[in-house]
Length: 601
Ligand SMILES: *Cc1c(COP(=O)(O)O)cnc(C)c1O
Image 1: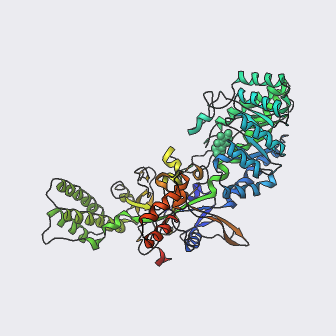
Image 2: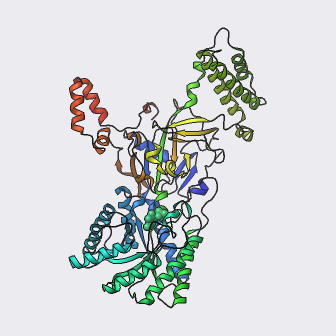
Image 3: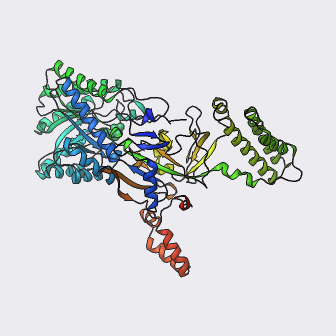
């Protein structure tokens, strides 16, 4: 048996019961029951299941943990949080988040004009908006407009030019100015893959000289009163708290010094995002709990405020990954096990076969539990010799086909004989006896961070979990790109079940995909976003909300600026009525593959 590390990565959101992956909430439905419901409605291909209750849980945990630390340390500042839209801007994710966040005044962070428009439109009016990233004068003007709507908005400046533009807009429009924050460039570096976000060589933030210049500029223009926030963000997926503590000390002192210079309305430190999520299924890689994290933040800031004799600052966080990652699961149907081509039915032995093929045949026939490992080894050696013979022209294509079938059958038989007692023996051969699983999805669309930065994700079949998985697996997507593969890794081996897809379905779940993947995904090969569904619980029952089908082929083409009228006109002219009707039907379907599932659903 194998629990796929669920105790390490799932944070109790999912459990294995009766051989099925279940949602550990309310009526505890299995993932497969939800998948079947959706597929019954004729939505095939990969599915993105979104669980708003998990987002809610993360929001509640974030606020409750920080508020508990505040109480424990008798801290005088308050706790605030915003969700950084770049992590997931999709409406079906964002709407439930805003709804749940209302009771805490949970706000939004925007890093571009388009994201700012989302925040201005949908953010609860009493919840904060922070704006990061490089800005032009129009974006700053948008900030003023948001302020005029009654939003509690803070423009966090990345450079002196942004401050100059704020002054210009203020003078030109005479509108009320939004609050101003200063992003500081820390001398202590960030951590992890995203260290470029923090540190002295960071692309963001003001140096200490620039902070002093900015303060002077604000004084000269009588706008110090708008300065409310000091901000830093040391990078994503921090696996330890150490770099954060250093950054907090640095930012805390900058806060205190500016207050002592006369920034009377300065009252907050924004510690950015970066809370990690456990993606590893083999061992823990995140070395702190949220309460250790919040205790450290509160303790450090309290200490600095006392040392410098200033008020304890309010705290803002912008954690995105922590809030959103666990909320989404990608479910991919397995289309094919490559070795199924090597079915015994296809074996076509000759009257007289090359000796090595005869031997392969005998190995298969005579194999027992005692000899399984040895015979399997021999068969792999024979196979290699036979391939060489083929290349030299000594055996023909039929011989080669027979050799491949027999070798795969030997491996299959050996695995089934060995699986219970000799798992360790078997593992030694993993590299040679892998099964390739073809999955109906695009890695570039649905797991772009795997492709781009080797980000791992927990992987687990959603059924068969009471059976021992016996095949060392590599996973292949349906794009025509050889990078669309998750290869077998002996250090982090993935074992899956040997299934006969003519008789049963087999679905693989990828977990913790709710942060960044939804929006970074690309339409390589023109595979678009999978069909997505919000799974919500009402009165002890599962309700499927907001089913959004994967984009139609014709719409995908329109998206990349093809003239779809022209496409239709050209096809129309060259096809008879019957074929054109079929064509029109295909244009209105999505790109993912359809299979003959119907007879076992
Ligand atoms: C990306 C980003 C975040 C979110 O980071 P996570 O690692 O997802 O928590 C927060 N603040 C800023 C300024 C960012 O650029």
